[in-house]
Amino acid sequence: MKSVEDREKQLRARLAELNAHMHQIEDQLDAPADPDVEERAVERELDEVLEGIGNVELHEAQAINAALDRITAGEYGYCVECGDKISEDRLDVVPHAPKCQKCAA
Image (cartoon, rainbow, N blue to C red; front, side, top):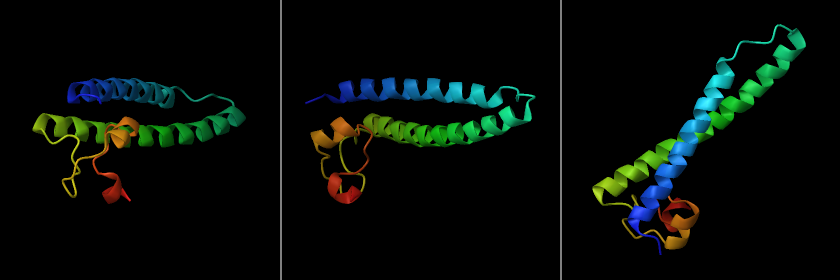
C-alpha cells in the first residue's frame, strides 16, 4: 500500500514528464516549415498527430493537478462523486483517478 506522499511523488514525476514532452511538441510545432511542398504536406499530417498527443497529455496533466489539489485538501483517494474510498488497485493503475470504479463506470 502506497502512502499519500508516495502517490504525490509519483504524480509530480509524471507531471514533470508530461510538461517536458508537451514542450518538445510545442518546439516541433513551432519549427519552420520545410520549403518542399510534399515535405510540408507530410509535416502537416505529423503536426495533427502531435497536436492530438499534446491534447491527451494536457488533459492528463489537468487531471494530475486536480489530484494534487485533492492531496492538499486531504481528499485524495476518495471518490469525488460518492465519497467512498478509491481502491488501491485502481490508484495503482490511475493514480490521478477522481472516482471509484463504480462511479467511473
